Length: 236
Length: 292
Image 1 (cartoon, rainbow over the protein chains, first blue to last red):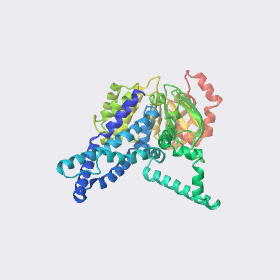
Image 2 (image 1 turned 120 degrees about the vertical axis):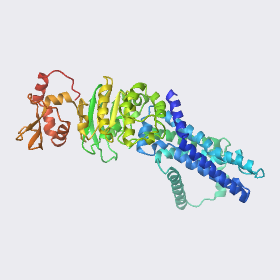
Image 3 (image 1 turned 45 degrees about the vertical axis):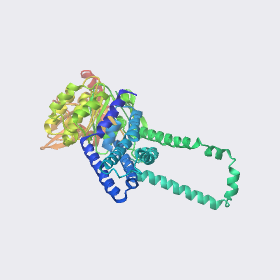
Image 4 (image 1 turned 180 degrees about the vertical axis):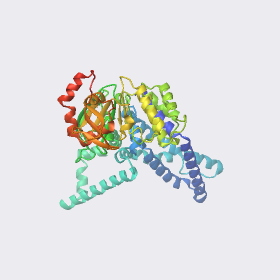
């Protein structure tokens, strides 16, 4: 990668840590602490509320942070005419949203737990510990390729449009499937299930290696799609 | 420097706003891009900068295909859009971060431009007014010493002294390796700055040197409208006319009148520009390179 990548990446980080942003981040931390404190007093179970908050915050922060430069025309002119490779711009966004955003999202939670422990040594973090936070963040990481692609494709209201499209696709698939069952005679699933366990495709899908491979395929597919969309992106 | 071949573009597949245009702009030119509202001046600049993809045809700027947005193109091109956007950080941070991306960036020239534009520095970019943001971008653009400098309505939002400084800076800093295309509705702002006119409508982009235009047309005032006037505008009980070249005329070519003639009397304008009479005038005049 060229030197411009370094500059570009530094630029993004510098852009993140502005005084205004730090103020907002501080307020975010204070809000989590406030909710966590009162929720812990109320239920003695801070994790039950905080983990959904963590996931939602990461998703919405991520949505705002996924390619923010393409959300309006003026901003996109600046972004697209910046002299660096399209691949550098894409990679910088990927690093930023896949690694930096989760760290930014997790830190105030961990800090809140730490402060709560100092204040109330009896408040046990049954749910809110690094392991559960990591498993909650998996939702963010799993939706990342989809939203990363959606951010370039839709530009605005990314979460609604992307998940809306996925929902529509699921509904359409269900309708087609139900239509097919009306056309073709009903199937005896018990017989079929027994019969089809020997099929090569069933063997491949049920193989222990298939699941990680399919997950990898999902990640690669949407990331490549996002890169191709970036190459075709215009500033209208 | 810039080669446009068979270029067509439309925001919707049914309606092309630019149809099949061709042109060539050599190095060392400062060109004024003039056209009526909606003919696609800003669109053309965006196409050259690689921000839009043509339906058909090609643009080669600085020996690179614009549509590919390669680093080679972007590092030698600077585009100042009509409406500006600047990130939310200090002006000096902006320069520190972005200047290394432009290999020919001249920090002392940037300081000079900043001073000439009376820009408060360093200051947060968001605290600049619209005019100051524009000045900042123009100063940065000049200092990056691009081979192709694209400016879309650069004088919009500039105060009167800044407009003068802008003209001066363009003239002082231009060299043989650089070209600039300035799109504007205010032709008077370009008077004395440009050496090439790019006259645009949907079907045509005519790039012609002012030298050739001066050898082909004259602007004169007449008490009675002459028959051979290509365009005439009433002006204080007289007629200000664009007429075929008059050796006796001392008046500078009026860009606004020239554009009006192209816009309203295009056929006559082109017919005269390509006529034998013009060619003969050109031969008798001192030599010069036309960019048409």
